[in-house]
Amino acid sequence: MKTFYLTDSGKVRSHNEDSVIITKNQSGDYLMAVADGMGGHSAGEIASSIVVSHISKCFNESFCNMEKSKAVNWMREMAKEVNDLIFDYAKDHPESKGMGTTLVMALVTNDYVLIGNIGDSSGFVLKDSKLHKVTYDHTLVNLLIKAGELTEEEAKDHPKKNVLMKALGANNPIDIDIFDCDMDISSVLLCSDGLTSMLDVEQIEKVLLSESEIEDKVIKLIRKSNNRGGNDNISIAYLEFTESGD
Image (cartoon, rainbow, N blue to C red; front, side, top):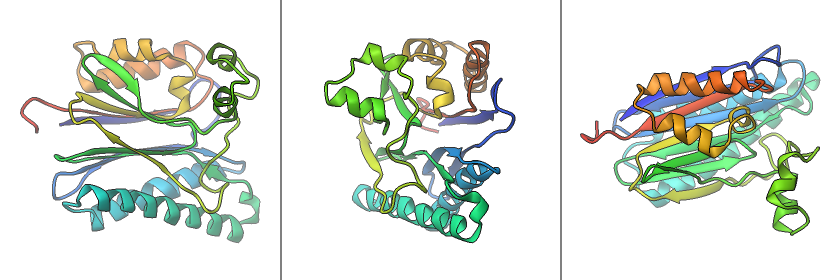
């Protein structure tokens, strides 16, 4: 496998509230995670950092050759734990009231690929040279689309398109959506909405299908997002399967 991750503050925001990681444990399993923080006084940055650091620590300490059903339960437990950690931090630091973060994470093993999300950070897979969105955004406009009150086209420029209906630190109890992916895929892409709000699926797909090195693909996606306005922090975690299975 080849992996690369990167985060960028974008062209508009003064600081970066995203956190991103890819880590490999001793049994050769991979954890990928992107968290997009929210809240004033650097609280969003703290929230996303709490989530990514805790999950990656637990992954390296306790996740080893886990069968799929146990891995699903592990993801659910991680979501609960980091949610509690954010609420505890906000209780001890009143200035951080309202802090929260999205989360999209993936477990990539030789036997399964699981993607989980809370909020509007996205998980995609590349299969047969087509990029497919796996996750479902927990946003107000998505609820309105589902209810038949908005069309996909109307949702693109809706004034409340960024209003979240679910986030870590905002809902308690919390539940993470988990998707069991086809193993016949060539890559996994996780990103914050700083990417998907600037580039559509076809534009992202074109970059991922290029002959470039994995690092160059991620850098190019961030550069393209910034060239289109860079209205938000941009974070990407990308993993490519290699033919040798390395």
